[in-house]
Image (cartoon, rainbow over all chains, first blue to last red; front, top):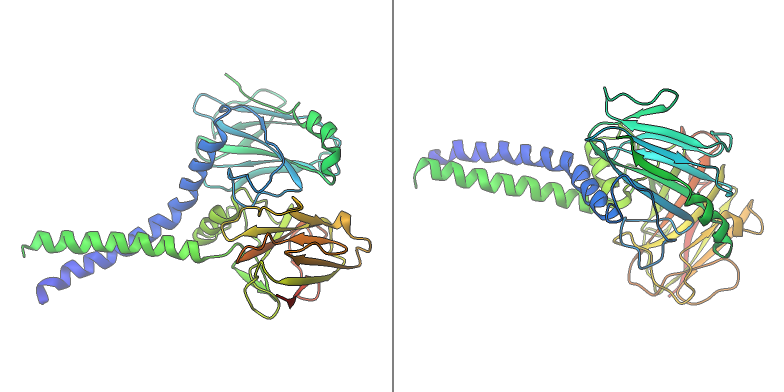
Length: 172
Length: 188
């Protein structure tokens, strides 16, 4: 029986380590999966998703009151520029999530004074164009997300037209 | 049994148990499991670097791309005010007061976090639909109701998410039990 004491202790240590690694990696794996799903229309490209219904399966807990435009980005070749013009809605915002699911940046129309929002998403050390607000993120990949409040789905057309002017593109 | 085989066996079992237990623990967590206010659960560290590993994992599973507290607060309920699981075949009345925020919405999801098919194609009710924002009621029920109504689609178990956008306190504090709506089951 004493011959099992060492192996059991090693097993317990590995169990603790596996617990910790799994908890830490869980968000990263889900984020990679989400980026993979959202990148079907293209990476470093803004995609205007239709309003959420019961058929929506891309992300969990979509808000049916919001129109989402997403840009899965890849900074391996340089910064990515995101430009969101004013949208005729009571609320709209741009947020940037890094590979760990942390919010690196968020700004809404009220804090922006209903002016356009222009940012350059970059990793630490990557140069960004003069005059552009740099948003530094951890990791090469993440998601930029535009949310627009749609109070009345029957009045969505002008909001949809305006949000489709939002762009996302690699600098190089 | 040889020594290396004992170590390999226990090591493999340890890795499997550790990973499996972590996944099970995260899956058992509910969005905003950090703080309970009546039937509602919430947290303040969604989407921030301050969030601990477990919070980050649960939010990634239940509400990926959630906004930080200054932009929106998320309150999730899987039970009524009496502590009973929310049942899609029952009728519930939510009663609330003015919420200290720019606007809010109430959305019904299944246990996996997806919107639920229903006869009205209605998935949420927002503050804009309340005749009196200071004193409002919403009925959550399978059959159509007079006034603000959120259909359940007759699913076995559902959850409600109350999104409160641009909270007056900048997301620093949070709402009390008196400020959040009660969820009372009226019948099945």
